[in-house]
Image 1 (cartoon, one colour):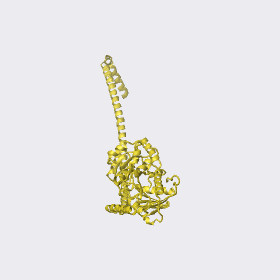
Image 2 (image 1 turned 90 degrees about the vertical axis):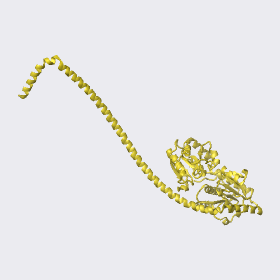
Image 3 (image 1 turned 180 degrees about the vertical axis):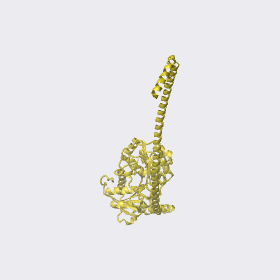
Image 4 (image 1 turned 180 degrees about the horizontal axis):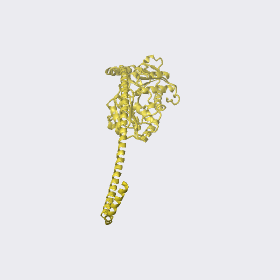
Length: 464
């Protein structure tokens, strides 16, 4: 299921150019660009996506009547607005369409592609959270008044609410493209095992890539994630712990702190602690099904995709109406270009690096998949052996219980026999005492001749 854009766009439809370094791995920024393109198209706008490399998302976008190009020179029509998601592709687009109003989006606090394009043609800077806004202010001198905070949203029609959480959690998930089989993940696994939780991992880094995780999230009670992944888990109704193996960990997202955590996009600004089994365990111990449900309700009310993309659409419409064209003096454009080229030369060629990185990530994904498959085989074997050992243990326990029951029954019978023996001995002693009294009596002595005669006569009659 996909979200339905709320009604047609206000005013005339726009011709919008989205610039992105590549659409290959379905990371947060890539999925944001995909969602934005599809949403704007359903709103009636003409959309073109410019990227240096495309993966399978290009087929999805083209099927939705969205053009995908690797060279802006292939575009014959001038766009009304450029929305830039990554630095070099944004610069390439605005230099080609030199009078088109442009807005840029900072998706990351430290990545090179998150650096803003410092050109007069850029009329609006968008930050997806406070961490990115701080970067624009403190690293690039952009005043806070020129920055709009528009947070990532989630398609609520795809990420449906799960049933109510159990009182005690039973299953957990690490939901991250950066999670791999390393020491940090093992710390999470150990903390979960200590509390009887099963743990799965979803993400390209672990080799368990899942193109549509919406259906899977409902199977878990606790989800470890950051950024977009954390938002998707939150609106699904999972108890969310802000954590990513590449950055560290934060806290369990509670109803009282969910607004603050979302303002920081459940991101690195909150992950200030190392990932250890003690730290992870402390957050798991804070699990509260009712509180997690309240946080999820807040997330669904505030974190929908329509809210986020509607704000971006409004910004694009405003720019196109206020600035149909942007006239930049040639000498100013020359200075801006010189500054950009100086920065580009000092930092090398990020575009080439992006392409090389994309290739390396694809190779790593294959290796991670092989590693993940092998781990799954080992896990199946381990589970089978554990089940066998548990079966032996159960049978041994049953046999021990039977032996204890038999021993108890025998002990009871032995005690009863001993009691009967003591009673018999007491009766025998009494009879022997009575017999001695009879033998010692006068009547026994007086009748002794008669008993002898009787015995004699009895023996003769038997012989006869």
